[in-house]
Image 1: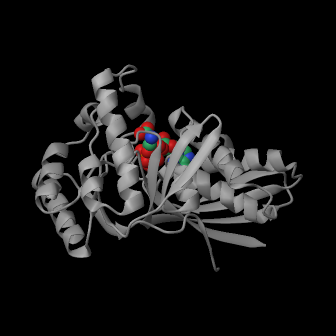
Image 2: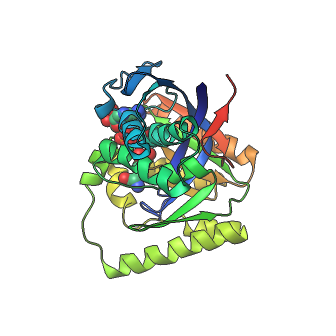
Length: 306
Ligand SMILES: Nc1ncnc2c1ncn2[C@@H]1O[C@H](COP(=O)(O)OP(=O)(O)O)[C@@H](O)[C@H]1O
Ligand SMILES: N[C@@H](CCOP(=O)(O)O)C(=O)O
């Protein structure tokens, strides 16, 4: 039996929700194909130009598949073919797409034996390999679709949030920011006044999503803790953000750990205009860039026909 899935890109952090809020994107997505093999262990074949490791212990899909095999007590092996469209180090959850895709793909092959919490726990093993830390704000929306809140990872407590019909524009300037590096530069302590502002924004953003209050969503898309530090790694960040908001975007910020920047808009025309602005800014400073105008994906990792 062969299992083919598509695994979506994700926007983690959702500006003020560092490590706890994320959404799934309709595009881009990776394609992965799985099959059971007699030889125990994991075999990885990459069908893209990213040169990711094929040794299972060095590839996030590999470590997740090894963990799934062990957890299931399975005595055969799994071969996975990865066709990656989400560039590693993009801030669009490239590692999460492989980790979550591997967990879901293995689960289908093994007969649907894992719960959603099991899948997230397994996929977090992949995120730990990529970033040095277990975080679930990419893998949870990648698995479940929509917008998700990770209230806690110890113990795991996932809260799916109602997703308003918003458009998402993402620009991916073609520079690489490794999530592991973007975590290293963060301050370990925050001022109470900043924490209070951030709590207000997170609560406002979740309430805004749940009540479809566009004004509240826009006002709450503010990050006073992480963005001021990480935006230094992203050329023209302030200019892009200011111009997109002027053009009518509700708001946005760094996608994951960057360098991608995302904006939410109420309609497609604004989302397209925002994309044109993003492109123009990066073209004007000679940075190759790629723009996606898309929506929030209702579904996460999905099985597709051969
Ligand atoms: N299957 C995989 N998919 C993506 N990245 C992988 C994979 N296996 C290992 N990696 C490593 O993980 C890192 C990319 O993860 P990360 O920095 O979190 O990027 P992103 O923000 O796109 O998720 C790179 O160092 C890459 O080599
Ligand atoms: N919460 C994480 C999210 C990283 O997202 P990625 O798409 O850049 O992998 C963090 O900000 O470190």
